[in-house]
Length: 466
Image 1 (cartoon, rainbow, N blue to C red):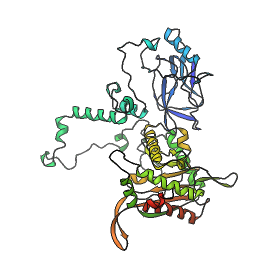
Image 2: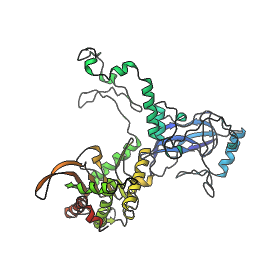
Image 3: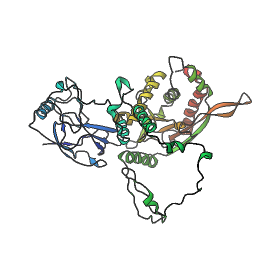
Image 4: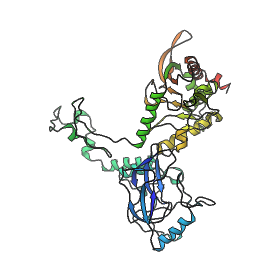
């Protein structure tokens, strides 16, 4: 009998939440078979089993929070030939090792083994080389978000043809399958509801509703519960209570610490970004889309941090020292289905604009798939926040502790602007800069902000010095 304890996933966290089990009691598993999908504070992680055998017990239901080092799953050894083969593989060592645990002293050394597909509820053959030709198709899916989307919509992944690299099933494949199913199942009544209002039968403007308490009308989502209690301060009934996920707990702790420790100040400026937009368009071609706007912005921010390095560091409160980094890991705020994350472009100061663009695109895809590494999520030295993508002009952002500054970029829109004494329609945006007043005074912060703003307005002259 082997009990797999929840490992330390390398994020400095003490617990993880079970999102779903990938196996059930009675399943036969091999070494490295994914057995559970868990949510840490920063990402979704599939946990491979370090043992082979038969699943004896699952220590927790989906939604349960398991502390690091506590039992996750118990796997019993079996005398069946298949299980015996798996134990031999287990003793040989596994090539899929997470931080904090392994499957043998020689795990991952000298060779790498591809993970065998595991079909829940089916007995696996003793040899992977003897699989029958009629074996069920195993869908090629990497992202746990894609699998969750398919599961919630009851889409059979085995019936999809992936459009990603090497046939990988990606999110758009599942969304297309959902849309096609809705089109097939659309009824005449549904089609009638889309006709002009004049063709609709007359109905009362207000339909009577049964008198039902608000709490009874609400349908709790997964993980929520109807509270039913009355708030003493407002006298209103609580609609529902939603447990904070590990992700939200860490976000709350980080932002609260930032507000408590950092004496921050904010400065901002309106910028004519017309030349920046023109530069972006000039870099496009029929065969090359060129670097994106965010990559150009990142290039100017990196140049500004090299000119004003005090903004690329941290405050060592214990030793009462202001520390400046030699390199720049540029953090990029990214909104995902799980919340806001800030992955960093490592050694951004060593990359060209095209290199920054490629890395930004890779990090964005990894963020949406929940596959960012703990290092990518925690190594940033400065944050660039493009909140203009949400259609807003400005924001007094919270510094991502222990960093000492954050630059925000608002939406770029057409506005009247005075150029050479005449009013013209230009592409305007607003830059908002929040900084730790302990590391510099307003003059340095304003100089950095003005440098980036000048780069937006006259990028050609700045590129000449890069």
